[in-house]
Length: 172
Image (cartoon, rainbow, N blue to C red):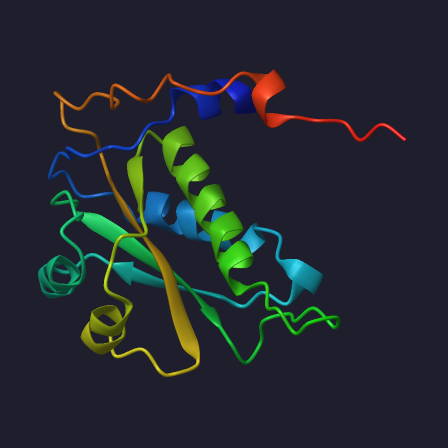
């Protein structure tokens, strides 16, 4: 499938089958995370695989948006390795983690695995639940699994602004 078709067809899955995701597919999704570009190639991304019943139960304590997925990834960044902009010290962690998560979602879609980006979570509860050290910052959960037979895109899925509304050219 070409990329634009993949991007158009991917949607946030909120109803998952309980069929387990095969390890080779998990490995491919993690490889996409490993290969994702990061600022200055610092590679601060840290990805927690959440698939055991105990780990999935903890997910429910961190966010109501778990969708009873059989698999989730918590994408974080390491403050000790993240790139920092010299002008103001701003770090690239959120951006790097977002690029990584996007690569993971697109690889999952290519493998027939549905996903949802979940940023609505309690960071403190997440750090406690998964025993994250202070230098690891959670950015987003990615719930994943095979879409349930009755899974459909949100009514807003096809509602995108026109290209003329999001693009501008600087005319000198």
